[in-house]
Length: 217
Figure 1: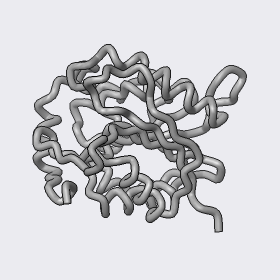
Figure 2: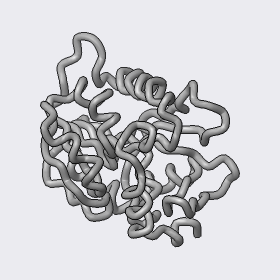
Figure 3: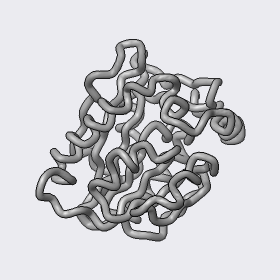
Figure 4: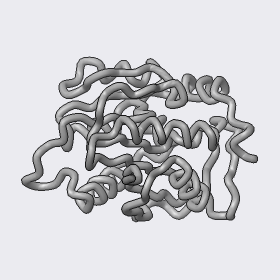
């Protein structure tokens, strides 16, 4: 299994070596940030989150936030307060004095135990650092922290060869769409909407965004 090769210490060492800027966060493709953020904004608007005339959500959390690219480019426009979960302190430190930033949790997602209710839990380009079992457990914790009517958003690269792919460079796994859907189901989540991100360079992995909510009894 590809996820059995994940080593959290190796992943942290890799990210500690990366510059705390958009170029570092996006692996040398900083120009994709604008189209990525616009795609995310449009997707949320289809869920009734954000957009013209919409009241801001009370609280969101950016998980695996890095330097806060998505927080500053999207989430602070749709939520009054945005919490941060990011294991690399030099990344999240740039956000400490920013208006609208709430709690900053300097830890990996596998260690985070949310104690605050959220309207929106955002996960982008970070879940590949969790094993399948860790990801299922993490999503179950997220579901319990979600307000009624709230959303868990997952936006991740997709493997296209039918198998999960391990990347030795940052000790992460790129999963198939089918694997994600299986894990969502096992975590007790219902997939409400999903789209492929448009406008990314063809040499990059496809990126898919999912909108999830807990199953109702």
